[in-house]
Length: 167
Image (cartoon, rainbow, N blue to C red; front, side):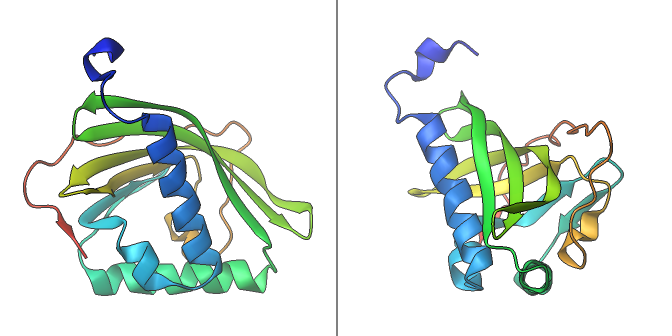
């Protein structure tokens, strides 16, 4: 779509980066309620080798707490996700790309890897409905992400129209 059609709307890069920062902060601080406010169910997670749909708040919580525990066990001090590109697809739909960097006291513990996220405007909030992560293990929540030698971020799945619900 032509970017001019959305020039009157807020900067999608700013919205996208704020979303990434809020989720990273929530993960490091073990704040599931802050995390859940920005996530929809169902929520589709795509990796290089798998596609999973998270269907409930309880399922999201299990993954969240396991990921937090994994980050804590590795003494992660920085979980940086840096937006590289974000654009409106519709006035209520932003797709973006970012790179994830994970550090422990200034030492990189996982190679950086690319990701994509879809945000949808629900009421007045931008909510994540799908992500694609260039890792080989979905359950990075139980282990640190594994990044292949040539990471490939898969396309996001088709957008789901009505039915997504915010926690």
